[in-house]
Image (cartoon, rainbow, N blue to C red; front, side, top):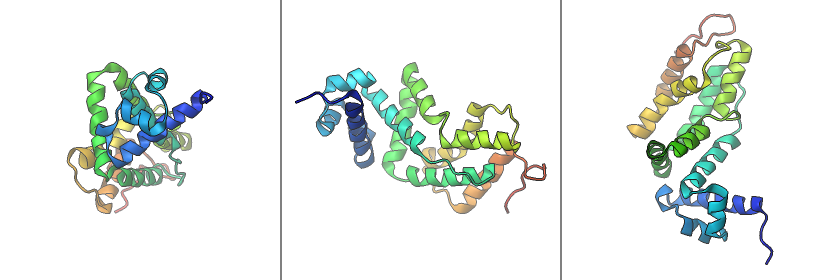
Length: 198
């Protein structure tokens, strides 16, 4: 049998890993199980990704990049859409466990720390694009530190949904969004700072 092209093998490995993450959780991801499900040899896995940890981070990075960025015309509107999607994804136990796993792995290994950062802050990720559009519209300062802004945006939801395992209702999300856009210095179409929605 002809050896599959490298892109085919890579896609098979990532698809198998995504399936395990969705159905069983990150604790069940190992080279043997990924190889069994994908039909791709472990040696190929290591050649493409180096480690199974790197494979998991690559899957997360791909999923973030694949998310379609909203374009509502305002930073607050874009962030509302992005964060509602995030809350849907973060609801299953497997998703919360995956985030905790990524944090732990990034603490253990500087290589994983960079992979985690790349997965969260991507040039074509939806939140980065929302920030870039807001800068282009003059909603926020054109010199806004995107990495720091990402912490401001992601922090409240991570703290409530992942750390505290608390439900985030519509009122909670509205308050978070109001506080976030004010913290980022967002202004409305009149040039004034964006007003709270309630």
